[in-house]
Image: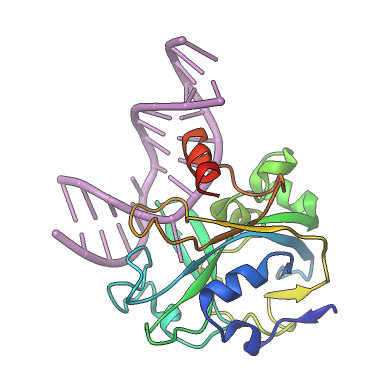
Amino acid sequence: LNEVLGISFYDRKSMIVAEDLIGKTLVRILPDGQELEGNIVETEAYGGSRDPASHAFRGISKRNEVMFGRPGRAYIYFTYGFYYCLNIVSNPGKTKASAVLIRAIEPVKGIEFMEKQRKTNFLTSLTSGPGKLCQALSIDGKLNGTDVTTSSGPLYVVNKGVSPIFVRRSRRVGITTAIDRKWRFFSDGNPFVSKVSFKLRRVLQRES
DNA sequence: CGCTCGATATTCT
DNA sequence: GAATATCGAGCGA
C-alpha cells in the first residue's frame, strides 16, 4: 500500500491499465513543492494502429510520438485550442502505440489551489473532465513525456487502497469512430465522473 | 435542462 | 477548409 505504480503496472494492455487505474491516486508536485492529489474515477483506453479513435491510428507525428515510446510516461496533448489532456502510455502490443486517458479525478489534497486554477468553488466541477483536471492540477505541454513511475518527478500515481470501488465500463465518449468498444471505465455513482449529455447518458444506460 | 456557438492547435483532406 | 480524446457562456423552454 501507498506504493508508487511502477513500469510493470503500465506495461500491460491499455484496457487492463485503464480499469486498474480506477481507485488509484494521481499525485502532482508543483514547482514550489506543493502537493496536489486526486483519486482517479474515470479513464479511457486507446490503442494504436487498430484503433481508429486513437491519435496514434495514422502513425507517429510530432504530437503523438510519446505514445510510441516506453510505458509509464505522460502523453499530454493540447486540444480544441484551449485544453490539455493527460494520458499515461501503456503496452502497445502489436499495434505500435497505446495509452490511457485520465478523464476525471476526485479532489483529495490541494483543493484551494484547484479552485484558483479553475476559477470556481464548485467542487464537482473542479476535475470532472480531462480538460478540467489538467487545468486544476496545472498540467500542460511542458510535462509531455514525463516519467510517471517515480515519486521524485512532478507527476505519479500511488496505490492508497481506496475502496470500495464499483468499476463499470461503457463505450468511450467524445469520439465518433469505434464507438462500439467498451473501453471507458468509471467509478459508478461517483459525482466526480465527467458529465455526459442526457442523450448519451440514456444510450449508456441502455447498453449497460 | 438542452442546444448552439466560440475559442483556435494540430492533424488530415 | 474541416474535424477533433473540450469546456462554458448564452439563450430558450
